[in-house]
Length: 504
Image (cartoon, rainbow, N blue to C red; front, side):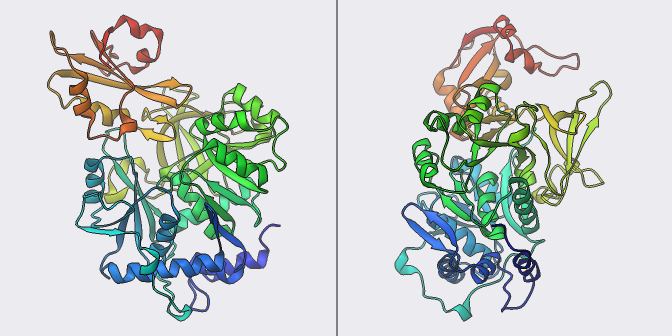
C-alpha cells in the first residue's frame, strides 16, 4: 500500500519541529514505522527503530571524536553496514559528508580534500595517509549505549548541504557538487511518483554509496520509508538469488550490470517482476527485447551528480516506441533545449528544478548556471513532437565505463605532462563489456619511442579505471577549421589513416 496521506503530512510538518517531532528523517520513520524493515546487509536486518538506535550509538561515538567546530567530514569506504551507519550518524550530528571514490589515487584524494577544505576523514582503511585527522569505523565494543533522551538531532535542515561529490569537467579539473537535503528529498519524492513506489518496496543497492546513484537509494529509504538491501558490490548471481525470493524489489543498474544479469533471469521472468532503474545511456533494441520477454520492468533514466540522480525517465510501456529516448522530465523538473544557429533541432540540454544543485563548490565554473537558474548539462539533445528527450551527444565528451564517469581532458592533461608528447586526444570507444573504454591517440616527437613504463608513470596519478585500454601513436592530429582536434574521426574506420603504431 502507498504511504497514507496523513503519514506524509506528519513527515512534512515535523521537519523543523521540537524534540517530540524530530527533524531527523530517520527518527521520523522510527516513530511512524518502528517495526517496518529498513535495512538489510548480508545476514543481518534492522527495523527503522533498531536502525535508529544503532545510528545514535555511532553518532555519540563520533561526537566524542570530532571537534565541535568541524562542519564537514570526508568518508572513504566501500559499501558496508559500518559505512551506512556512519553516513546516517554524521547527518544526525549536522555534519556535511564528502564522499570519496575508493578507486581514486592518493593525489586525487588529496586534491579533493584540499579543495573542499576538509581535514577530517573517516575510513575503513587506516593505511590511507592523506590527512592527520583520521578516524576508523568504531568496533562494537567501542560503541556507547545511548538513552533515547540523549539522541542527537542536529541535521536534516533542508537548505543545508547533505553531501558533496566530485565530478570532473571539460577542463579536467574536478569540481565539488554540494547536494542539499532539499535536493535529495525532491529527488526521492519524484522517484516515488515515477516508479509508483509503495511502503512494501525494497531497493537493492549494489552501486557504491559514494556515487549519487547509490546514495540516492539510502535517501529514498529515509524519505519514503522503504527498505534498502545493501550489497558490497554487484554480483549477478547474488542479485538473481535475491530476485528469486524477493517481492516488490527495485534495482538500480547500468547497462553492463543488466547484460550480466539477463542470462540468469528465468525465461518466464521472476514471480514478481522487479523494477529496474537503468542509468548510463540508452538500451539497445536486442537487450530491450530480452528484458520484455523476461518481464523485466526497465525504466531508462537520465541524470548526473549535479541533479541528485534521475531527472528524466522513460517508462517500460514507452521503451519500444521511443527506443533511444531518455524519456520525459520527472515531477518538478523543467527541461529545455537551447538552440545555437545551425544546430537545429539539436541543442544543449538545460534543466531546472528542486533536485538540481545550485552551484559548484567554491563557485567554480559559474557559467554552468544561467542567470535564470537553468543548469547547463553540457549534453546535446533534441525533443520529439511529444516532448521526449533524446540525448544526441555529450559536449563534455564524457565517457561512461562500467558506471564510472571519465573525462578525456583529465587523461589528456596527464599525458601532456611529458615533453615527449606534443598532442593527446582521448575518446570513448564502444565496448560490449564495459559500455565504453577510453582510448588515447598521441603525437610524439620525431624519432622518440615511448615505453609502456613511461606511459604508466604518466597515468599513475589517475584512478586505474581512467587509464586508456589502448594508446596509439599517430602521424598527425586531424583538426577542425578552428584548429581543434577532430575527435570524431578517431571513432571511425578513418582513424587507421593516422595511426603509426600501437604503444599499448
